[in-house]
Length: 269
Image: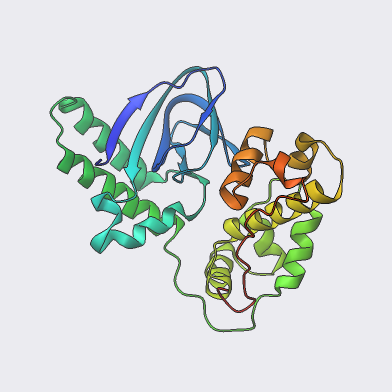
């Protein structure tokens, strides 16, 4: 499967699914709401979101709307080989806005699609998608390596995460707690833990949820809400992916779901 670029309206009913390819959604007209594995936000004209592969996401358009959607398989040419660094864009879901140069490029891309909607070949779609990804990477994921300095206080960050498990935590919240710029914090965090901040927070949410399921009689929906999952369905999917079992089985002492890999304070376990 190669990359595909298309324009569609989103249904105004709330739908959800997951797929085995990455996706970028950019608003062209109207407004749409997204929730990607507990991270919620809205996109309108000239803003968008990144949906990593195999992430359950809920979405709904609002009134008249139109979105540009890029479907990007993990093995597509614009994410592999010389362009493998661009795959880091999909380490975590996020929302973004297009600046002036990207708006001009979007106009060009739409003209290309309008000029030859049926004859635009797979190779040209790869090139158009690759240019957009490269520009987004420079803006969202292309921060320079962080200078050496004192290590992050992960114990303090863990306490902060635990106090805000039910809240929609952003990377900026963690960066402020660590007294760093967001770009500096992202790079330092990955260097020290081997994970993106979003992956780490998600792991802490799942560990807390597993404890609540095994140690309390709280309803599954309540556990999901207390640990920051936007819906019971998203929570159930996350448990299956992480532990190999649905939340209901995590209550049973006889069940021994596979543990999450632990993270070393200095790097990967």
